[in-house]
Length: 214
Image (cartoon, rainbow, N blue to C red; front, side):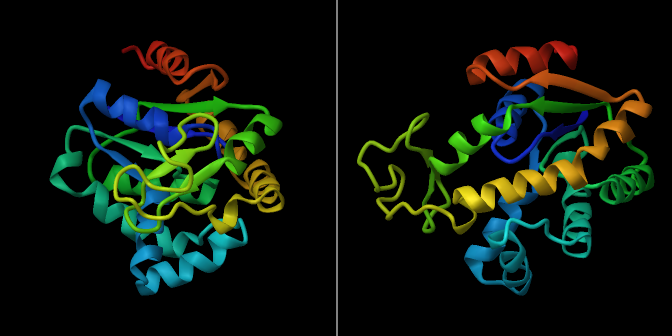
């Protein structure tokens, strides 16, 4: 099964993607995770992406699409994959359709996780990350055992530069302007599955499972 998760920053796409990995037994592909790893490693791609991410802007298609295509070609994606955070614009959706077509595959579902803006801001301003190992925490929903210290490696937790309220609201605005047209794009193809993204992760997982027939 090939599935896309849509939703604004903070909607819980990463959390639900991992739950779907366990349920569907196919890999998750998160362009956000791939790009953040590149930033941490200081690669040329990471340096370019960092400038956009810290301003709360979308990373250009030219940086993302080729990297994603290579990932989808990997053997572990043969039975399917879960795309988290991509596509973010109709131009990317069209490029992705070309990638799948070239591989003789097709999308099965596009799940749109719907969450009110104020809830998104509350979620994102509480995020903390470990620059050493990449682990993520939240001061309200999944706090570390010791404040400011990573449970996994003991590194110092930080607030990402793009997790301040002003940048968050800008990211949400960018999403509304550039990404929401994807709903119409996929609705016209009969693939869109809207899901209420409020509630516990378990409740949201159940809603998604119902709309994708699992």
